[in-house]
Length: 364
Image (tube, helix red, strand yellow):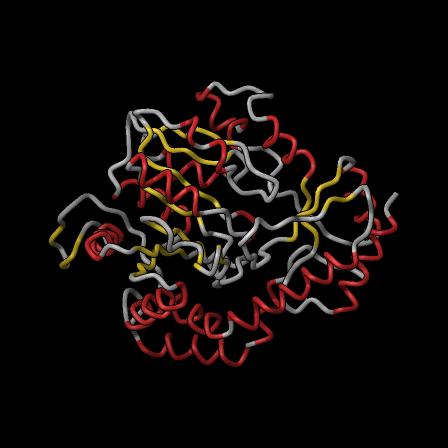
């Protein structure tokens, strides 16, 4: 049996007729940029998250860097962010000239909230929380710190569509919730796409102007903006998947529960949720000290895996200028050397799950 780490075709075939019908509807409409599909998706996604306003953008990275731009965070400013994240989180900060200040993660892969305050200086302007692997981070203390020090709060929700902390959905705690709709995401499109969720009406308007070359009215440019529009086709297809998010999430929750109940190997550590947090299980990430041997073993059994992520941002070549060396973030670096994402996707059969579980239990 051959099992890929992720399969996006299964998710398509689950709702094939609906996707194809919507695609034809959009194609036949003759309107492909900033039309009714985008507007309606924005309304539906805002309602889904419990946020006030949603603005569709071209990607999750655009959501991040434009967020910091519109929050007026740039040269000379510092943004606190966890070390164990995808490099796009950090790019959202540095593309505006601001400096990332790294904090170690906790045992649930989220930012260690107990280590944030010691990093706050007079240059700190914001905290960026990343809800990694679909697991909601602890948000209550972060919110309190932002109030105490008058800091902006941005959430990277690229992997956490639908995840909650104490009943509140990720992306709605701070000033801006940044989402990606890359095809592999839980709410994934069929190409690139992203969005922000915000509470402030004026900020939502600013995003809409900025995404369209800085123009509110065609050819009348208020600011120097960007070309970062969610396509009509992607918005329409995302609306189809959004209608099924509850069942898609429940399916992944069942797979994760199967893994958590079935995997028993003292060489393999299972993921642990923070108290009050839920996960939508974008990834099911285990840890293993002898990771390379585990990967080789699973490869021989035709079980695919991915390392999310082998090189933490502070050690990436792209950020050599920050001057951080190996050993700077020992917990982050330990995770980078031990985490492994095992197969997790909608449409995964019980037989496939059992095959993965049996393989992991047999690893020596």
